[in-house]
Amino acid sequence: MAIQAWRVKDRYYRLIGSRCRKCGAEYFPPVYRCRKCGSADIEDRQMPKEGSILTYTRLHEPLPGFEAQAPFYLAVVRLDNGARVLTQLVDSPEESVRTGARVRATVRRARVDGETGLIVYGYKFIVV
Amino acid sequence: MPSKAYIASAGFTKVGDRWADSLLDLAVEAATSALRRTPKVKPQQIFVGNMFSAFGAAQEHLGALLASALGMSGIPAVKVESACASGASAFNVAYSLVRSGALDSAMVVGVEKMRDLEPEEVSQALALAESAEYTQFVGATFAALNGLVARHYMERYDVSRDELSAIPVMDHANAVTADHAQFRKAITPDVVSRSSMVADPLRLYDCAPVGDGAAALLLVNDRAAAGASPGGMAEVLGGQIATDEFSVYEREDMLDFRATREAFKKAMAQAGLSARKLGFVEVHDAFSVVGALSLESMGFSKRGEGAKDANEGKYGMESELPINTFGGLKARGHPVGATGVYQLAEAYIQLTGEAGKNQVEDADFCATQNIGGVDTTSAVHVLGRAG
Image (tube, rainbow over all chains, first blue to last red; front, side, top):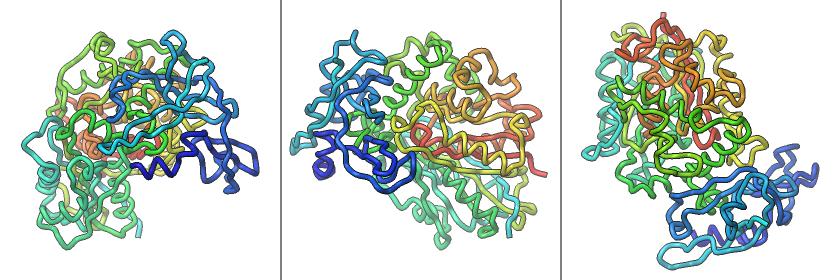
C-alpha cells in the first residue's frame, strides 16, 4: 500500500483537490468531472485550510493500523470553499468538538504500514 | 422476446455461526434447497452475489466454483459484486436477462462467510466498499460513516435515542418466530441504548450483526414457467439499480438517499404500481439510521420522520405496511453478499403463503431494497403474486 499513499502525497500533505475551470466548483477528494456542470476541464487546486464541522463521530473500533489512536474523532468538515472532507480531529478537547465548530488543517502521522513500518503522513484537523 | 419473469423457488441457510461449513458448503446448501423444489428447472446460467470472498476466504472465481460443485459445469456462471448490494445486484442482472428472453431460466445464489474473520478483519472487509484513498486512509470504518450520518440525522430532525432504536426493536420482535434468523430474541429500547458504543451515536444494537449465510433463487420466464414450481411462483414486476456519489460525505445532502429514491421510483413505474398497493417492504436496515432514511427516501415517511414513525408503530407486523417481516438485517442477519437474496427469498415465501407465523395476510405486492455503501448503490425490486 506504500505506493498507493506515495501517489497521492500532495493530496495528503497539502490538501490538493480539484477546481472546475468552467463553473469554479471545488472538490476534495479530487474529481475527474465536475458534479455541478459535468465539465471534464478540471485542474488541481489547493484547498483552504479552514472550515467547520458538519457532523462528527467518536470511533471506538477503528481499522487495523489505527488502534493506538482509538478512540478518536472523525468529522465531515465543510471547507470554506464548500468542499467536504472526511478527516480525523486531533488535539481537540472533547468539549470543543461540536457541530459548527471551526477547524484548521494540519499534517500528522496517519498510519504505520505493515511490518516494514513505512510511516504515512496526511491531513488531520484541529478545532480552533 | 420480452417475457414475464418469475421466482420459482427459494432456498436459504440459517444465518449465524456456521463454523463447520465453508463458503462453498453454504452456497451449495442454499442452491440445492432451491433446486430440489423445482426439479423441472435446469438453470441456464448461475449468478453469484458475494462481496469479499477474496479477502475473507482467499477464494474468487465463485461462479465456476459453484457450477462445478453442483454438477453443472458447462453453463455460464459469474460473480456479481456491488458491496452489500451484491445479492440484489446479482438478482437484477439475472432478472433482466430472463425477462428479456436471453435466458429462460437462471439461478441466483448470494453467499458470505464472515465469522471466520476477527472483528477488526470484518471492519477491514466492509471498508473495502469505501474509498481506499480517502475513507480507509483516515481509519474510518463503515460503521463510522454511518455514525456521522446518524448524528447529522438526529441533530437536523431532533430525533431521540429511543426513536432511533425503534427499527432495531421491531426487527428483533419480528425475528422471534423466524427459523432462519440469527437473533430470535426480543429486545427493548433500553437494550439498544445501553449496548456498547461503536461510532457515537451508534451503538452495537444499531448495527446489523456479523454472520454466515447463503440464499438461492430460481428464476424462470414464460417459456420455462409451465409446471416449473409446485410450490407456487411470484412475479418480478420491476427491478432497478441506481447509484449516488461514491462517498456519503461528498454529497450536497448526506441525508438524501438518492440511489434508493431513484431505484424505487423507477422500479415502481416499471411495475405500474402506486406505493399504497405494497403489502410489505424488506428494507436495508444495516444501521438503524439507514433503515429510517430508506423509509424516507422511498416516500413511506416524510423526511426526518422515518424513525419517529417506526417508534409510533407505523411499520409493525399489524400495521398497514409491515417492514422486515423476518427481522431484517438487524435480526435475521446480514451476511452481506447474501442479504439481498435473503430479502427476495423472504418476499417470495410471503407471496406464496409459506411464511408460517410471520405470514403477512392479504399482501399482493411487495418491494425489497438492498444497499451497498451508504446508499451508494441501491437495488430495488417489486414483486407480486403470480397468476
